Image (cartoon, rainbow, N blue to C red):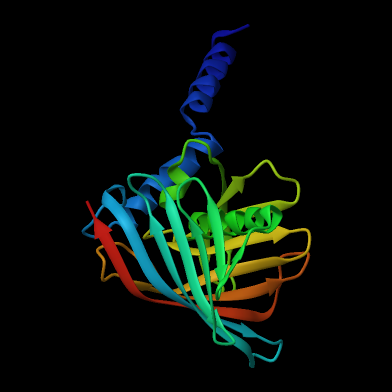
Amino acid sequence: MNYKSLLSIVLSLFFLSCTPSPEEEAQALVEKSIEAHELSKKWENVAAIRFKKLTRLLDEDGAVESESEQWVEFRLKPYFEAKLTWAKDSISHIVNFNGSKMSYQMGENSIQNEGFLKVKKAEIDAAYFSFAQPWMLADEDVNLIYEGQKTLEKGELAESIRIELGLDSESKWIYFDPNSARIVAAERHTKGQNNLIETISYDETSGLLLAKEQKVFKLDGNGNTQFSQAEYLYSDYQVTFE
């Protein structure tokens, strides 16, 4: 082996060792995004957060099919608790997780079915994971893969990270603005449905950058947008810091 060949191999190995892996690129992007979402406050200092979520379900023509309002509460310290409160047909519904046990109160009736409560706990976990981005992405149990840039619904470019959940039935991606590193969208594929949630505007009143308005688009099997199927409006943020 001549000197030039040896030098070429050594340089190739050097550059390969210096090139970050997709996992490392994803972690770096998440860290940058956390900085972008922490305006004057730190998420690590949040003790509790409460807000109102208005959901509008739309038909294929964009007309409102139904509208519902829900109060969402997450207590992060000293341990995780969650509470969802809403009314339907003049009957109050309260889903509560007290840190160890689930409960569901519908009017004067307490729902005791364990299977039902397990489903509601999974809904709470999914709601918190989706809401608490990008901070939840820094969890060491979350496996992330950087996938480069992708063009979103309105033609804008975004940096893409795939979340590996270890589930064949579900896939998730988070999309970031390539300049500011703000989260601009999330994509979810399940066996029954694929959708894209775009963040239209943000709330900055708490010192954190939180979602204010989001639109949900139904996707076909190839990831193409079919129609807007829902709108989420978040308001009345009440954040308690340590």
